[in-house]
Image 1: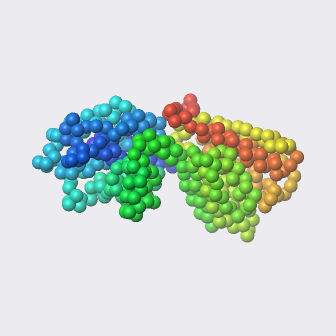
Image 2: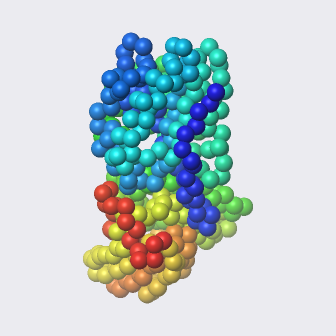
Image 3: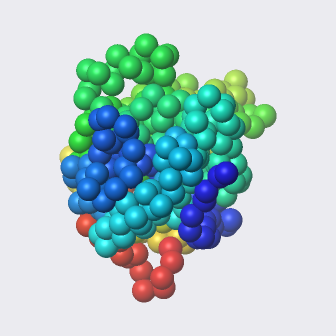
Length: 394
């Protein structure tokens, strides 16, 4: 017998924006509540005790981030003489009532009552209870399984998710390394406060691959990074400019481009801008809590101004002239084209102006100003779930 509770809420999926729903698959015993050390069954109200920090931190995640919450638990022998249902449901219902009182509402609860020896396809770490999540509506690669056992980590592997293991670091590290799951586990910690902090950081990442007959591009971005960059496009000056975006915006950027530079630079620059813009759009998600707008900066003899709005409508105003054919190995005619492509793919409004005598300073000032504008616009208040728009959608 498989038990599934609650109606599924419609997944938050915008087909125009192709934003898929991310999920937190959360274990019950040892994760939300403490597991009794002798029989491992929470079969009375006296045994019900919550994991330290779960209310405050999971409430913040549920309120301010865009994950669906799905409980997944094995309850060995539930419904048998050794674990009657009438002893299970009072504690289960009290737990759910307490969690919902703190704003923690699960979109679904999946309970498998089989025993380990049954080898049921629905028992964790198998995915038989969760087949509805293998569809285009959900982003499993951006989802997490949170639990205290190796089976939770293995479930993450089977789903194509990452795992968060609630264990002391040394114990958890040895556990996942010994099982060969080190690459699956994104975080090991005994503290819900660190889980929440990690999720607030990792909620705004994206990977974009763009492959055509002219270019092969991979962009990885973390909006809440430290400005770490690893960029190789085949154009040294272009690499230098893209690094300004990462470094001065505080975003971690990894960009790999294999383009048809034997033809010219056009496809490499244009397609990189499109992939980078798409990465920003995906990482911003539903844009709740962000500042939305940004602008900035002078550089030596030049004054570069970039006003930015991640408001969902692409537009470019460009007021910058260049007298040289190239700066480094990058054609100056491609500067406008880069920002137009970035604006289109990121669905952002860009107003760019620059004046000055030195062409290198002028374009570098523009890229730095864009980076500082991005830094301001993507800043997110973790205590706000407000959309920065009177329209109700961006």
